Image (tube, rainbow, N blue to C red; front, side, top):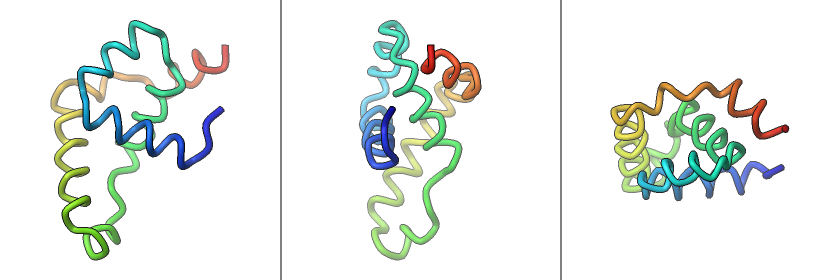
Length: 85
C-alpha cells in the first residue's frame, strides 16, 4: 500500500508519460493506476496556482490530456478491488 506522497509521485509520473498507463494496465499494476485516477479526479489544488503557477498549469494540462485520452473509463472502485487482491 502506498502512502499519499508515493501515490502523488506515481500519478505525476504517469501523467508526464501517458504511454506508461497502457504498460501499467498490461502489467496489472492496479494500485498505481488507482492512484492515478484518484489524483486526476481530485484535480490540481487551486492553491498551487498561487504558489507554483507553472506546476499548476502543467498538471492541469496533463490531467486534461489524461481525460481526453479516455482516462474517465477507468473505474476507481474496480481498480481498488483489483489492487487488494
